[in-house]
Each structure stands twice: as structure tokens, then as C-alpha cells.
Image (tube, rainbow, N blue to C red; front, top):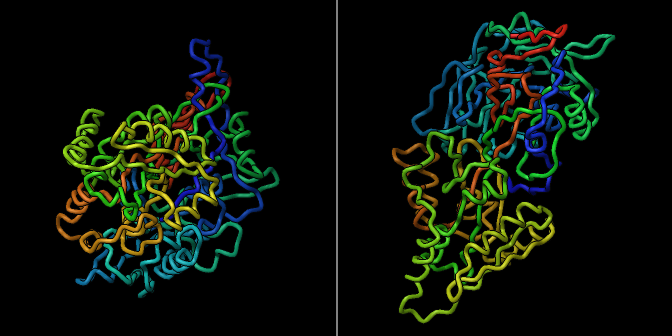
Length: 497
């Protein structure tokens, strides 16, 4: 888990906004190509983010793959057991799976990939609860934890490569496609020995070199590549041509952090009132262009464990009444609160200003915004120099928020420390019956932070090119065999599926 800097990326809007009412003269697509960075490694553990990492999901497979609800599905693992104390997971590795070089997948390959991931920048943080990984024979992988985690499998969507092949520019993998180079350039070719044996939508996918992310964007706008995944929450300009957009729910949460060391916010009643005053729908629709999902709890609304039954409907009148109840008959001054925000992000600054206005009620609560440059923002958080802050964090799919509200948590800038909270967090990790619901009810009452929404990424394709795409936060090509890809050929639209 890490706090996101949230710098604005290149902003885009869907082209339909610009072209509403115009005649569609889309000439169609006569080829299907993807961008990649020539000369850079395709090792999925160490390669660069963006196009390179996206491409690796067609070459490599994990032990478990997260579906659109963040639920782990078995891939290279066919089953597992957990010790009574919850510290040892024993996984069975799928047999009869061949790597792209013809060798057979064994437990040692999975073990080495996990060990490398544990030491990597991309995966190290999420795997810090693993103490040891070992292969037992050719088909058994043993993972020993330092603390129980009943949701460990949701963290094991780590691509597996053949042990020892990672030094190659393209390590051996077990995925549906093979990376091929020829005198004409690089391309992906359907893997005839893919263990799943499913029919793929294309036998060959061309690859186009892109030196950086800006080049990837140019290649997409010029129709040289056919898919582009990005963050559209920043709003802004328009792409040329007609586009289809598929929303991808992510585990990136935006929230209000609360400094419980602040005199005013030590009052639990005030914290409870503040959580009633958040117009989440307006934030999502008006400031994030609907590329997010409103959330009142620190778990994605698309996840099976989201406690929708505990949600409270927003009402300005309810919020004002909650404040009035605190001030009624009490000799207390108006709560003067400072809301800190990363000023390098115009969208977050605008949201913070809107929330400050929404939460301010004359004579009872007044919220002002302080926008700081990213470095100064982090310094203010670390020193506790704030009342509230607008934050963004990428959670892991086990939905462990110990870093945010656990005693001594790395991202616990608000100083929340409560033995009952810590006990509930541990109970969730251990998988205790009813533990999740108990925690979310506790968060509703204690209010150590206030979730706002979970952001979406967006998969853009040229209109009429792709159908039945099912992108997920970790894999834009999720269930790629089910995609239908249409190419124009000699003036006739032809399905490549």
C-alpha cells in the first residue's frame, strides 16, 4: 500500500463529447497492433509500467488472477491448504504446463518468481507479510507468513517466469502468446502449446515501438495501435475519432484523512457528523467525470465484501442536523478546520475546495483549504500539521488498511491508535467469522478516516474494433480469448474471432 502522489496525467475526454451530431466517417481498422518499448525488458517483475507491463499479461500467467470483483481465480495453482495457525499456505502447482521454451512448469519456477517479486519495487510492499517461500518437489509450493492473512491468494497475482530466464530480455512464460522477432519487426504469435487450449481472437498481433508514454498516446490517436489504457479522472481535451470506453474499477481510494490529535477532531461526534456531509455522487460526477465509484468504506464497491447495507444516504439537512445536535445547549466555538491537499493536482484541489464548502456551516464548522506542493504536502502530513487532508492510496486486494489506521501504520498520518481497531484489523486478516462487518461498523462509528470514492481506469478502443472486452485493474486483456476483434478488409468488416 502506498500514498499516491496524484500528479495529473495527460487529460482526455471521450471523443463523443466533441463529435456529437457529426457524421461518422470512421474508415475502420485493417490491423490490430499494440505498443511496446523496444530494447527494454519484458520481465513482468521489473519491466516499466504502462504499455510494457500491460503486454506481459499476454505472455505470462500468475498463480491466481483477480477478476473484475478483485476475487482470486486459480490459474497456475490448482488448489491450496492453510495450516491451523494460518501461517503456512501449501499450494499445488498445475501440472502439464509448458513454458515458451518447451520446458515444464515446476514449483521452483513459481517460488523463484515470488522471491524476486518480494524484493521488487512493484510487488515488495504487498508481499512484506511473507517470511519464506520454498518448493517441495515439482508440484508443491509452501509459503510461510509472519502474520496470518486469510486473503493471501488475492495478493498472488504475480506473473510466473521460468527460473533463470529472467536475465533474458523476454523470459520464458506460459501465456497465450509468444514474443517473436523477425527482420520485419516484433510481434506476438499465438502459442500452439498453451495449456488452456482456448481459441484466441488473433493468431498474430503486431507490435509497434514506442519510446515513451507520449509516443504510445500518439500511436493510439493515429490509429497505429488499437488499445489505450489510461486515467481519465483529470478531465480535459478530446481525442480525435470515435472511441469506445470501458471502465476499469481499481483499488485506488480517495479519502479524507483525519488528524485525531487536532483538538476539534478528538470529538467523535464531530467526526461522525463530517462523514454525513460528503456529497460523494457530486464529487464523482462533477469532478471526476464519473470515472470513479462512490464509496463509504475502504473497500471497492465492486468487491463482494463491500457492506452496502451499512451505507447512509447523503442529505445536507441530515448533516446540518447532526452538527446542530452537537452545538445545541453547548458552549462551544465554531470548529475551524484546515483541509490539506496536494496543490500539484488541480482535480484534487478542486475537490478539496468543494468539500470545504460543503462541510462549512456558519457558526458551527468552517473548513478552509491549504494547497501545498507535493513535497511540502508530505512534510505537513508527516509532522501532523493539519486537521483534515485529501489523500489517495492504492490498496491491495486483501483490503488490509493497517497502514492507514493501525497503530504505528506507515500511512497513519492522523495518529489514530485504538486497541479495538487493531484487534479488528487482525481479526480480518485471520478470517474470523463476521470480522469484516464488525470492522466496517466500527469504522462507521469511530471515523478514523472518511472514504470518498474508488477511481476507475479506462480502456479506450477505436469504435467498432473490439467487443466483449473485460479489462481488470491488473490485466486489461483479462479473458482475452473471449474478446471479439473486428478488422476492415477490402472494404468488408470482418470478425477476427
